[in-house]
Image 1 (cartoon, rainbow, N blue to C red):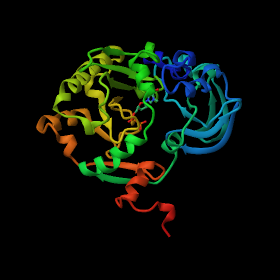
Image 2 (image 1 turned 90 degrees about the horizontal axis):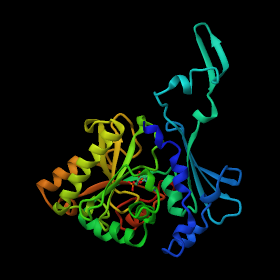
Image 3 (image 1 turned 120 degrees about the vertical axis):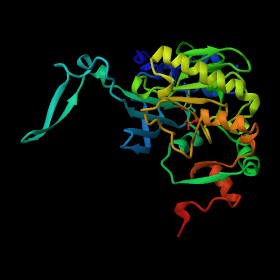
Image 4 (image 1 turned 60 degrees about the vertical axis):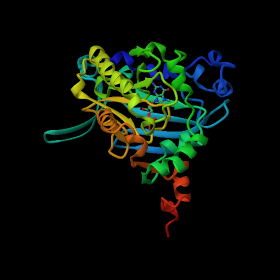
Length: 337
Ligand code: M7G
């Protein structure tokens, strides 16, 4: 059932540039994007490998597309196996086996299933900014224990000047992109939200990953949350879990529901992933369970504007440099003699 989502990401990235013409400041950027007519990767000119993660079977490369300005990032990720219809997908005479070697009871083979069952999830970001490249680069990371004062002086000042565009979020909320992918929507301006498959989700139930995006604008992250937001948070918890159990059959007790701090995108959003799936970004220095956030706010309405929140920052992130200038973080690892 969840397979219906498969391969929708590329289609979603192929937003019609005409739709956005003169609608916003990003129109020029979108007009120059490669997505509209992309059918294969022959126009991609590789510049360098940014990340090759053997464990996640994920390759991220930087390059350019012939005929288009600006850098591009291509992320290629091998997909999880889908348990449904294994006979059709794998165990049939179309799956060619090529033997590597045999020894007594043991044999090693390469299996080549039919092309249509062997796709690689591909995400293309074009034009990609330095910040996009830094986000996917393999880099040393450091922990910052961010007090309320450090948040105001360093983090907030920094993100008011520099952050990723939120255009994709507004496109979802305004039904300008990914409209047919919406799983649930509550249009209430205060407590409403959109529930939608995450860009990272390959669509197989095993790696279930959805995102709840509040209608309300201006809540940047958990730092901005207080007791006034409890009805919103509880609605996302209750309606989000109900929609997921209805559509995908995954019960609330098997969902991991959490925020990221720091997030990449400063319009509040909540991640819903399958508990049995080790989704990226679920580690303790990044993920904050929705249940804990609700509980902390119920105990103390202004908890998140006062608490020290720890987070990890990559050396390539411009926020690292700000904390370094502030004397909170040491010099970069490469500069240590
Ligand atoms: P985050 O915590 O701000 O960033 O989460 P990070 O997890 O990437 O560090 C933002 C979430 O939004 C991520 O899980 C992204 O995969 C997801 N996302 C990003 N974009 C650009 C899109 C998009 O265009 N569509 C959808 N559906 N999800 C997106």
